[in-house]
Length: 490
Ligand code: SF4
Image (cartoon, rainbow, N blue to C red; front, side):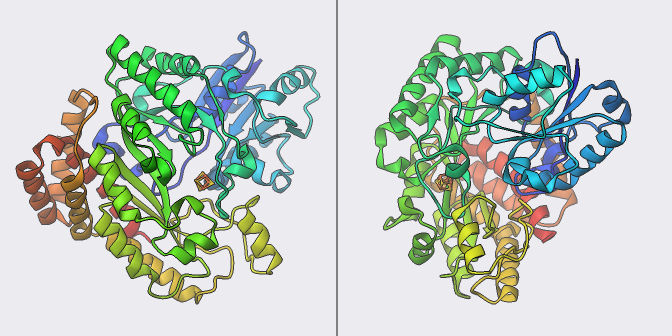
């Protein structure tokens, strides 16, 4: 069989990093790990082609070649995914669709021949034999959650790693917490399922075997959901680094209780984790209570951020405005917190109600739902009636994001971070590609674009006062350029 695997086009979002791809000489930020993993579940003698539409466009000839089109999409991909479905249907090719977009509401896509709802592992054998027999069912949904250690190694041979800023691995699925707005525990469960260390090392070896030397994103929603198992893995990674002599760095996501376990934090540093994304959501206690963010209660969140920076890991964090407890002063409260804590990469979103969440159920009960989530929490659209005046909320939100990413505020925040940051642990080798990205950024950010004086002042201060962290300063200036362009378009 000829199978075409398609990853749709990602719109311009906070995480797309579209505006800096020309600076770093890449085509897109993240590879389609889910699709590469599904590809590994298909029979070895089938012919597979993968088109990541963020790397190259999809042609009718690609679709015509296929016996079936496998499409994996997040909610934010809906417009592009709908285009792929209608083109495939027009050419008479059945679409097998999976991922969060179809898991959240498969009934909205009656034109799709077959939807995989939830995780694919358990249903793939039946789906493959039905496809061979020409009798695909409309819906496949597993009863049991799969053991993630049995998931096959992603088919890295289907993409060119050089097109991507990071490559990815997955250690766990699920999260022990149950924040009201989040669908992770509903979709993947509250008992994290983890891979054995040997299995993750195999995945890392497969990534390294592609010739990869850059950053690796451990895509778990909460890497420390099972702390004992996370520590076992980190020890194995430390040994693996020494034994293999590899110099890759890691980025992952975790909950703030990371700082309560100094051993865990130390192991992460020694394993080469350089960035961790944490859902801080709000400095306001009532808002945290409202969304059941129990792990963030009664803490000095700014001190927690500084502790992680002191250890040598940069905190990237998510913030939300639009909780019922938020009043008009929340925007300034959030801005001050983010600046003072030195959270450089602050993803501030408007609260959105995703299908399958407790928030969605509550707002539906209260008759406050007004539409669907776009999956892009930076597009300043509301899908429910907030307690605060909607105009005040969206305007306050826009102003907050624009202020945070104005050159003065942004570079000041980077300097606050650099002042706390103690670079330690293994570091990636600086490559020619990094040097070229620096030179291109000097031209674009330092000459061609507004904010150039703030940039040169920042670069000079970083060089004089934080020389050891100068590579991080350059990288943050490049990322900041993307955030600024996205913020200005709000
Ligand atoms: S800690 Fe993060 S992943 Fe876990 S439920 Fe809360 S928001 Fe979701």
